[in-house]
Length: 129
Image (cartoon, rainbow, N blue to C red; front, top):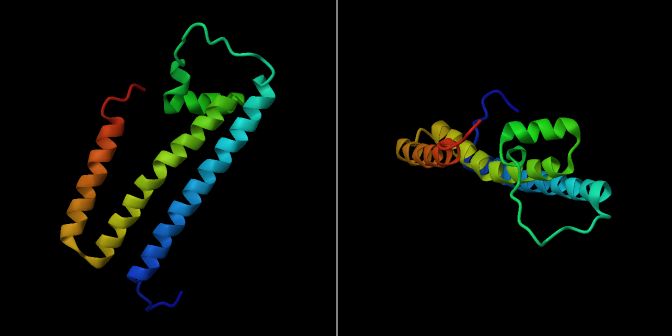
């Protein structure tokens, strides 16, 4: 990139589009790999649908997912795909925020920051680590 070239709106739109495309593609590939691994690990058993049992905390927390990934658990690989899918639009908001900061558009900086803070508070406000 040239030294004096500024980043344009079109460049940021292209970058944000690529983030969305690759985020969804990555999460889908990871979930498919986890699904195939799940079928390999426990695909031959017949599930018991007579009683309901909830998922353990390992499947619902980031630390549990990371520990399960280290152990090679297929369910945590699938959960990682879901986490990446959830993080993709949040990353888009972050890139939009940087774009508005570069443009020095204060109104959109404030609006985007409020949206980002609401989403992050909603996600992590009641989180149990």
